Amino acid sequence: MPKSRFVYEIYIAASAETVWKALLDGEFTRQYWEQEHFSDWKPGSTWEHRDAHGDRKVRLLGEVLEASPPHKLVLTWAEPADRANRDRHSRVTFEIEPVAEMVRLRITHDELEPGSKMERDITHGWPRVLSSLKSLLETGRPLKTWAR
Amino acid sequence: MKDTDIVFRALADRSRRTLLDRLHERDGQTLTELCADLDMSRQAVTQHLNILESAHLIVTAWRGREKLHFLNPVPLQEIYDRWIGKFERSRVRAMRELKRRLEETKSA
Image (cartoon, rainbow over all chains, first blue to last red; front, top):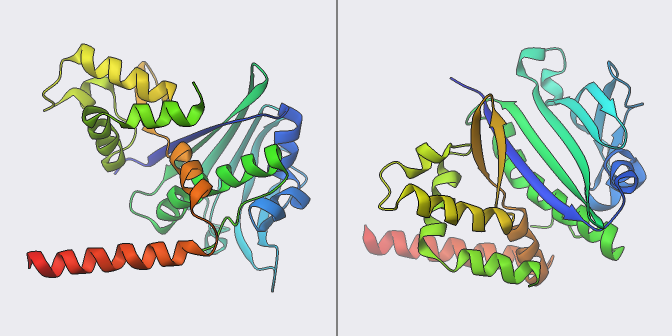
């Protein structure tokens, strides 16, 4: 069965450098994602995504495939249970492109197993995360991303 | 025109909502795939896709020489976030669930 792919886009009134930092810096991601990222973001390095509160559980992890600040970042993206199982890692490409006074942030999430939990999670997750990121960068206030 | 106006105008057309439904069912389709079984000319579908794209409700990406169309729900999330706050979400969801159950019972 072919793997699935989703593409999300948002326009944000901020510089490419700011959006890049907001995607990677735990201080930022804690505010709009309620999770923190850990990595040195160098190709070949691993990255982790931990809860910002409570027991700081690792929720997601992967490997940095490509990093060209502040325009392009490619990561593998997996559940902690699949840490060693590279065949089950999906892939996320972040592309940041200046457009007039704004930047266009495009997220391509592909290599996904159709019907998987990861596919369900990310199709709910990305729109919320991106909407909250935009709100934080443009108004200084994040949204309650995971409020139910 | 403001972004929100563009989004609502794009949604205010049944054919365009049908195209979004099709992408929601299966994301990443070519123009030819989207035109299949539709009672619309290829030219009309292209025009509708352009309007949806300018509202950022769809985005396109290439697979080799094929142009694929993807549903981008981010502008809808922004509209949702604008009027539905942290505390209302669970109530809204509970009511939606109630409606679904009642309607299922009725049609059973």
